[in-house]
Image (cartoon, rainbow, N blue to C red):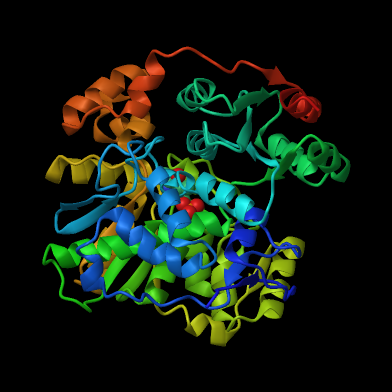
Length: 495
Ligand SMILES: *Cc1c(COP(=O)(O)O)cnc(C)c1O
């Protein structure tokens, strides 16, 4: 039976998985959700004997039911290959009795690679299935991380182009270097003189420009988005929760059926929502622990039942969690509202108009499976130092937020369930903050010196994503005024 997708808001039109992937966002501005969350049809015992790719197929086939077995397996093969520096793809590492699920072994050494390495293949397959001959043009505005992960995923994927805009003076030196050295005949990277919001508004304006869409179509192009709300990004993230449970089973850490905790450092609520989907598919979960940094809008939401984005935006050492509107939360709201699109739409209206909404008591009750916590900058740095001192293992700043939150949670609750912490980035990506947390003596040193020191301290090899950018040529040097973004796109596509 085919699993169809519908909007979290009012529109009741149903679309297939491939159409949902192509569209990204539903027509009424809502997010696509499956009519119901499918149940695993193999035992976790059976999954425990599978490779990552085999497990990925077992999960994705249940969501992407209009893909043939050959199509889906081909997407999985192309995604989880040598771009990852380990065949395990997502290894589990035990330290102090806690299991760190390392999601940073892909091309850009952060967890976005887990989904962005397969999304291009899901998209091109979806285009074929829907008889779309146009080349797919991915247009992205980035404040750093997503842009590089999308570039790496789409580079040289046939039938696609990718154009990334970033604020010329608004990303770190390493992030900029990662982007402007990107290889691939179908990639373009452009700095703009404005800030991230300008870049995002410029991209949105092009997406909504019907005139431009017509001209593009006549030249054989159409836009699509690699945004984190695409169902083609959410589903691949469900895989590693199923997989990690099965690894614990294979290693005899847990008995079949034994519930575990997942702790997730959260920003846009995509990663932890994937864990919630895994739980709903049949993975035994005790608590899903949502970890926030100082932008603790989600912590407050779980504590009080009120989502309120009316607050100051704080820049932290875990920048990928510096978010005040967690877009994927809408899918959780829809689920706990009993698949009520009207109720969800009303809350989203309130969020847009007043910046806040409150949950009905019946909805709040269904959040029992969540716990939450937050860590400030000091606590995050202290966690990096403690774990390093106790074990020699070096956490990145995002993972450290989760690790600190779990330490508190365990002390407060005494819950001794086996616990998996989603480890979302390599420490090499945030070397300055990480090394500064370990010792005063590293403060103020330059990035490249710190990379060598981190290598020495952690006894881990410098990842290719880092060594690569030190000595490769800059391939993208265009900078334009915010007002000229569309002109640049027209130039690139020869419109
Ligand atoms: C994106 C990101 C997060 C947050 O994930 P969400 O799905 O947005 O909650 C956490 N850590 C790192 C390193 C990230 O890149």
